[in-house]
Length: 150
Image (cartoon, rainbow, N blue to C red; front, side, top):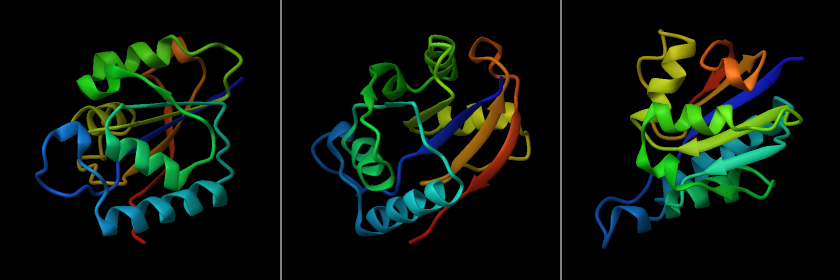
């Protein structure tokens, strides 16, 4: 049984602010996140599990792009590929589609393990990867990618 791993970098956020974790989406980020949501629907992506960073910009990105209730996990904000893979490996077997919404550099680095041509992973970048087993990640095949702009 194959599964889909969807890697999403948060949409464009405002610069500066009181703290990194509290930065909201910029106007462009809001329109890009909405465009991402339309792209996911067009691709038939219906997540069984969504895990996001606790940052404001990742929460807002998912609110505009998806409908499934997310699980907030601090490890995504910690921003290491190892932490992301740990989350993937912990995913229950009955989950067919897992979405991770986070930050660079870890989101881009993880996407590049599936396809080395993914050298850049700008805001709103999304990669859909087919994996045979959550425990086997980062072994998988890139199915689709986009950088939606609204």
